[in-house]
Length: 307
Length: 182
Image 1 (cartoon, each protein chain N blue to C red):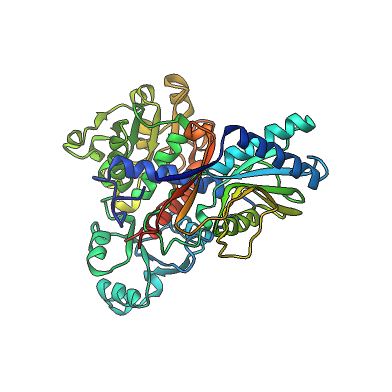
Image 2 (tube, rainbow over the protein chains, first blue to last red):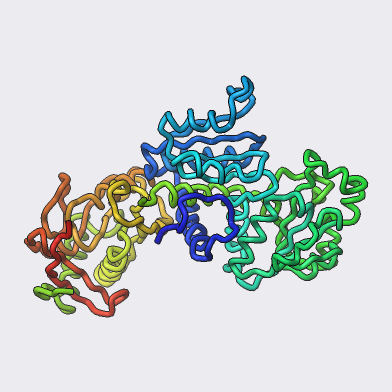
């Protein structure tokens, strides 16, 4: 069994077997993470570049840990300390890095399509760690893995994504992945944050958060991204919290079996109340642990692929 | 499958496993400090059978785990197919234990090398002893088994296939003609 593509650019169009293989492989690495020595020699001699043009804590650390635990050599590139400041173009930067013989590139960029572009100008395996408003496939995979760990399977589950759907690459990847795996996906948020025509992706729109909690098994709650101008689409974060924030009262009133996911970083008191963020319904830190296992699985499957 | 000979049948296999269990107990002076670790896939079932034999003999069950060595292999760059990984399941401490590593066929010794590395990452056992159902020769590394069910001298274009009820529906060991394709 191996993946059908040598890159991971998004989950759109990725076959069910591939997603299944990544999730199953992650189970192996989840076990490695529980060992006293959390390291295996599998990617010895492979060189991986983490090309991060946009800020990130979780994703970058998670990828780096995953790479180190597979014994790969890693280089971290961040724009603030690079020659991008001297005016070098993206393409030249990448060409130069590739000339130093790298095998894989993990890329995050503010523009959608950059990972796709990289596949045309380098021979390395490309992994998308978030591109603009397009996709963030490893986040969706770790979300699906965490849900599957909790419920056993994804098929038939009701999952609602809550928040700024229109400006979320996490939402896009989750919708594509979950639909492929046979889950029923809905979205919930203020109408200014729900893209027109989202129903064409086979997604239901729910306008009321109480209804969303009552009707679903899982809520994947997105962060209100003030850096992406979320302030222009809602009157205030306090008002957002009043209408769409998840609180213990709302959970207890509507559905005590709900499972809450959040990709982090959390705005406490906006999309989640502090009580919910630390409470018994959420699996937010499991998601973080699973994130390393999922990224190890993706790196392993792409890095040992027979060309 | 081009079968040349059936080397061990169902009864023979049972006797061999009984003997191996006795040998392991004799060498280790009982089952007190031993743990059994089977290597995926068939080593797991052989280890399970040795475990139940030990229970019959000593009336005490040693710890039992399963090891997957895929992540430690040395042939990622040369294989034609990507190997599928599965999960290692060893839930007990192997520090200061006498680990009995169990596999079906000992051939080049490369899988055992990988298993040794994998075990070292899990702890520091006081000894590791290798138990195999069949030793077919042609070692490529300096590795020797402590307990051998049967030595079967083979030529390079032969293969030894161990069949077990748990996965193959029968208990037997076959010698097969399998010319190497280049």
